[in-house]
Image (cartoon, rainbow, N blue to C red):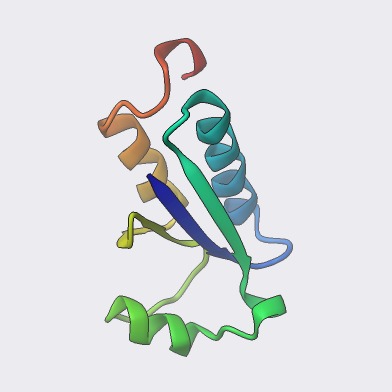
Length: 90
């Protein structure tokens, strides 16, 4: 499983998404993630809108196995709903 997180510096929800992804990658052998700083990479919200297919108002924008999940809240819900985090670490 691969998560790709599009975020920006100073964004608290981006930090939380990255921390959750780090916890998952430590807890699971089958989970990896890539964090992409949209400012550093020159990616605009308009660029993300083309990929996602709908307006993008906030970051992070997170994909899991190339499927758009949403922001941090949706990512956290996805992790919980699919029981991706071991019970001892929830």
